[in-house]
Length: 323
Ligand SMILES: [Ca+2]
Ligand SMILES: [Ca+2]
Ligand SMILES: [Zn+2]
Image 1 (cartoon, rainbow, N blue to C red):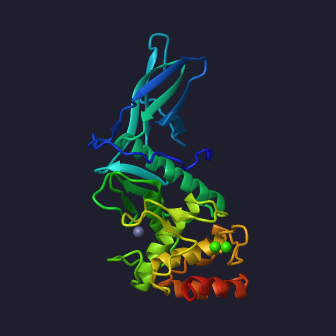
Image 2 (cartoon, helix red, strand yellow):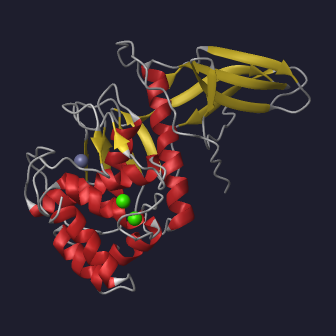
Image 3 (spheres, rainbow, N blue to C red):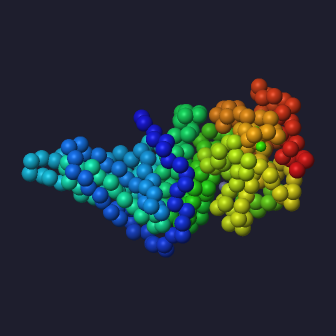
């Protein structure tokens, strides 16, 4: 299997039209056809003059192959693979169109539409999956994850992800982080009311903190001096995870500080003040199948590993006691 990783996550974030859902058929906005002896199809989202290629779509021809008499063919692909599928009311989204038999085809979707957002979800999920495959393998992926789109809330429950319209890469990867947490049995689940800057239930802080940590791993450069979310918490224009404001609740029941602690384990900016530079894979492997109920329990598990104990304690203190 080939996962293409050319996608940078500078994906469409522009204002979106209030286009209502039109079923699950994603009709291309434009199809470019170049005569060619070799048939080739690519799908792109066009955004501000840039063409962002869709990753890992597999096309099929449901109505037979081209013949001497039959010069066009129906092209079909579903937003579905063994790891996830994107659905609307239980029906999988699909791209379907007629195309000449011998041609190179570029299928274009304009950014800023519900269609483009559906494809954005697909692309972000594929990038995250590819990163997981490279760093930890996909054996832990228990079952196809169902992305319900658009939904009335952003949440994860029993192998189903729900996303509201419009969405963005930060919310998509955060919700996928919940699925990874569940599939890999990293921790116990706790749902409920929580304010990002306040202390909360210790299991809820770990549940939500892990999900945002996962988003950070997917989206941010680990050498960044200022890793910052801009679309994760509507009430905050920016949510920095390296320098957490002193006004944020202190202690291990703060989901914001849980993110900061987990991020410090894997980040490595110049002059890293926490001195730890683990890979996401190392952290994941230590915590897999441990079903922790709090970041305190995570810390205890990390202490049993090969991680430098002094640096680990300093990193804990940096996030939970001295900030
Ligand atoms: Ca750091
Ligand atoms: Ca670090
Ligand atoms: Zn969440």
